[in-house]
Image (cartoon, rainbow over all chains, first blue to last red):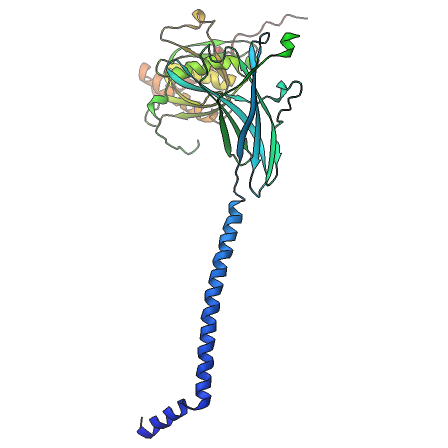
Length: 193
Length: 192
């Protein structure tokens, strides 16, 4: 390129119009980068909110033991164990409780054995209101009621029971349980009558 | 025959069968239901499971029949008990010597399990607890027919020296006789 051509090019580049264009381009670049950074932050926040919402939809059960009793029925040679349970669904998704079990752990023949008993709502008596499966549990809902189990006097062959655990299972196959340590003995009014 | 799927089983799951018998009665339309006396010495929880069953409502069990891929004479019954106790039991049967047990179990759709020791007989242990298990149809029947006939054909061919075709005819006849025994005695129905 000749010296005159170079001089003309530099002169053209430094005219007021060119400087204005350059300034506009720089401003546009700054605005674009700023908007980009802001959008990225917004997108990250939205993703976090979305993930938290999704987490609240994952199945979850919270089981709390409130009260219990043990009632020996001499004539029937068995014992009725009752556990009042508060079952909470802290998620945004409904569920249903489909099964409840009592696990009794004891030592027999040199091994630790665990017997599972199913909840029996036919054992209802008096003011006891037992759960009747299935139990509907809506989103962010809770329900409290009794789980009742019949334990034959000879179930453990006279061996002491080392551990009582109550489990509930929901329709998503999620199982939660509590370990119960104290079960007060109550009189059986029918036996007394 | 279904596609074979091999799985190596833990030997500790196997419970030896030390005696067998059959009980007829109201269960399974009067057919003879086999009683298997199991040696629970190494698996005391099996004895406890059988004892506990007398004191709880009917439980849950899943069963699977299979064959031993490395020993053509052996048929396997795998049982997963869930309620009232979580226990897995595997029973092995010899086709040559215990086919009547497998056949009776498949025909009657049930089996009694009793805990015991070698030498025990049903007649001398009638007061022992016994666990009645319903065996649903899992589709093993056709496989069993083939395993039984092939197994007894091999056995008769080996013991008599007869050619395979003759041995197969004998095997078929012996299977027929075995099944007459498994069906139990004909009920007496007096004329009206």
